[in-house]
Image (cartoon, rainbow, N blue to C red; front, side, top):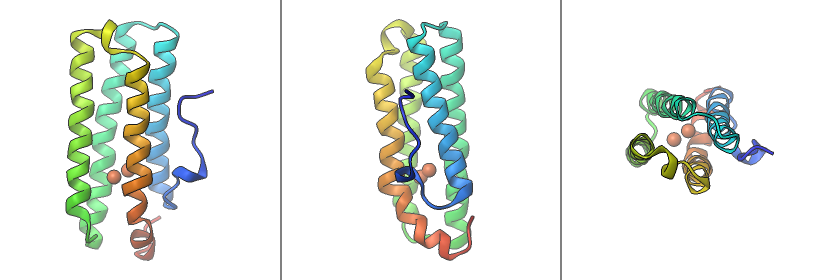
Length: 136
Ligand SMILES: [Fe+2]
Ligand SMILES: [Fe+2]
């Protein structure tokens, strides 16, 4: 069973954003699988870097929609994005310094919550607004 199961609960009702969230889910699941299978630190690092890069890309996409349609809560939402980026960069740095100690169950569970809490608490708040603007 994957660490994060994609369910309707995670959907924000906007196809382009759900696809990006699924990609992030897959990356965290891949990191968990690679850890459990005892894959090399090089591979773990590659997945981790990919996650950080893609998170950045995804947040930029959401923020460009906020700017385009004038989403009223964009300031607080962007602040959360910055915090989430800082957290993933920090984890990556710790992993690069001490891969053996840093890569454990707590780390992947943190990442699971890191993503799903943000989707369910904050991303879902823009759903109705962006859907009303015709975003798909
Ligand atoms: Fe998102
Ligand atoms: Fe977001």
